[in-house]
Amino acid sequence: AVTLVGAAAAGHAEDKKIVLGFAQVGAESAWRTANTVSVKSAAKDAGITLKFSDAQQKQENQIKAIRSYIAQKVDVIAFSPVVESGWEPVLEEAKRAHIPVVLTDRMIDAKDPSLYVTMIGSDFLEEGRRGGRWLEEHYKDDKGPINIVELQGTVGSAPANDRHAGLMEIIKNDPKFKVIASQSGDFTLAGGKQVMEAFAKTYGKQINVVYAHNDDMALGAIQAMEEAGMKPGKDVTVVSFDATKGGLQAAAAGKINVDVECSPLLGPQLMDTVKKIVAGEQVPHRIVTNETVFPMNVAAQVLPTRKY
Ligand code: GZL
Image (tube, rainbow, N blue to C red; front, side, top):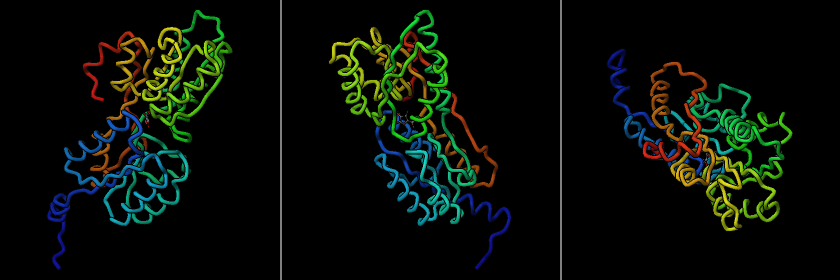
């Protein structure tokens, strides 16, 4: 057999298309749908062959998909871990197979940092702090009590854990704020509506704030509040995350008071990173996405420019 050396080998290597195996969480929210579109279109633009799986928000399905990518000997594996824990075994298998792994969107709690090359995604703790700081400012002249009901995202997921922790970090020194109830709506519209129906029944007019970990649950909660005769955005303050079109439209309609941006448009950064890894270049162990906060009064202005 002829052994290609130097430029010829490099040239030959460039001809071989990179194969990326991506194990997506599911299709639970508008954010997730936009994230999937970003990954797929960026792979196409980058000339990267994408193998894609949807785990319907089940960790065992993501693990199965990662195992199949290992068996197929893809060049790189990327995934958005549905929950933080339970990934060491399958990531050890990828390591033994010498297949680099990239985390996108959500983090894992694995002790061994060598189990993944980098994590590309938001700082959810800072997002939670932004929500908390907005509440502090919004209620600075109000002596309270300010009762908060919390619609949590998927139990055990990094965004749910950290958006909660970020809020608590800010309000823990201000006794006028009280989280009177907290329950998971699993990041879905139906889940948010169901939990909010129960909260409205149990707490009714005691509720001053709904703190929803994503827009889909906030939109479900808005439906439940209106059905219970409450006025979201007016007699109940609504804090939400993602800043999807749906969330910003609700804010422009005066039903969400502030939407903390969380960008799903990670596809281009992921493909750049995959190419660098395959080319043997160094990449930072953490790549944080830039994002901001949209109060109700600016939502209508930014809507025309939004991509998701
Ligand atoms: C956050 C992402 C979350 C979104 C939800 O980066 O993991 O999952 O906030 C989505 O809308 O379901």
